[in-house]
Length: 301
Image (tube, rainbow, N blue to C red; front, side, top):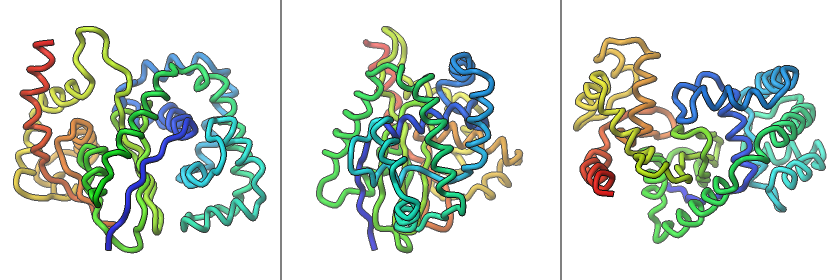
């Protein structure tokens, strides 16, 4: 069995990606934007608005709007999508969720209203004022990635876009939707359903300041500057190990290893093997082989 890859982009995807990047504290240290961006954005909202956002995110848990955005037939700007989403009947809400095999909460209609509420607040207070080059760059990235899908190279395009995620055909999987995202950089996130996977991958769509290194080069050099991460790469040379095995061999806590693997994944230094049931890791030599070229290009520029 095999799956096909589709690349999709709409401003609504990035609106949700930016809101999640802001609200999920566990990811703040791993994001390029970091806590400084979070503090700056916080100042644009009243405390009661921030509290309401956090309450609704807690209620929503793992419920994803990606299937709805992908299904939306009209304009998928923030206002265009939310207007369509708001007009769906309760039956239509359940029908779309059921089509993807999504675990449907009993309070779906109430959850829809709450999501619309905070997304309108988020859009008015932050998202509508972002640099338009971000959305333009993401659309260009999506268009360029679509052009790469030729002759059954879907798995290769997926691995390249995600800087090392290798998704093997398994179970009922038929369709993978790749979505470029900017705000949570360098994180890659996926929502898994019976026949569908929605994967949002990191894109550096804004150029660095004049004379400054590109974010990808910084992630690579930072990842290689740590003794533990170098040791993990050595362990992964020529073999695949799962998370538990890495923790046992390195001898550090699970949270520490998790942090190091995020840095290595962000730099594209590991292949993440996912077969629908288990995850394992191996060394991705491609990123190491590119390092001399990247440094040379930067220094000579």
